[in-house]
Length: 183
Image 1 (cartoon, one colour):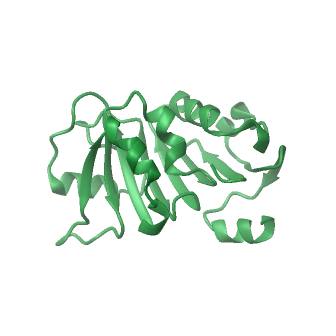
Image 2: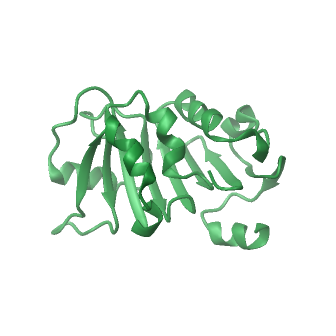
């Protein structure tokens, strides 16, 4: 995790928007997953979908050591059980999805993430709030501040955590505007 966290929650969409959470911060939460389906770079087009790859749980630690920031944008979804047997068009449709979490039934996943510059911008869809809360509880170092997960669950407010302090913040997808004021 970076030295700060900006986060807000839209309960109706089952979506968290954050800055400060990197892929490596997901490793504890993904420990029970079978792995992830990952798309790096651009979204592609209908005629030429973006490349994607399936990574087993054992490969995730190595992925977390890579420079995902250099990929620019990437998307991933976790799966439960055995590696999914899905078609390229299905994966492309799922990883290009922009609404509420609607993963492929074959994945039985908990998270669908869209990130830009690993740690800079994250839009995370989740299936169950308990999974999202467990992820945050395990990923936020105490030195940043203590986020009230019950208040976050209710939605409505954004939060800025840094140097042990928690402050209210606007809810926006314009991460640059928040970071320009705060950093």
